[in-house]
Amino acid sequence: MARGKYTRQFKFEAVRLMEKGVKSPSTIARELGLRRNQLYKWQKQVQIKGDAAFPGEGKRGVSKLSEVELLRRRVLQLEEENEILKKAEEYFTRAQP
Image (cartoon, rainbow, N blue to C red; front, side):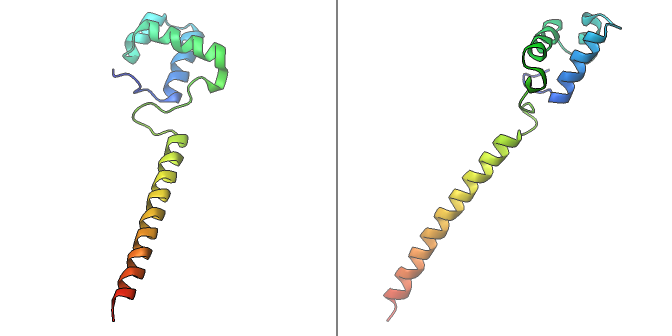
């Protein structure tokens, strides 16, 4: 599967399955369509960072931070457009006799 495609919940669940020990990491990886070493990387991230291990939602999901950033940029763009329209309105109302 493509890089960055997995959701945060998917990664935590994959690590949980591996740590549960019912199936081997190779079997879990095969069933989930992953490489075994990817499971180990995710497990290490969870051990180091805990719940903060996977901050984003992958490429398919937009994290809350980037969504807020996109909205802020859009607000700034609209404010600039409003200023331009106000100046154009002033110019054209003054130019008319």
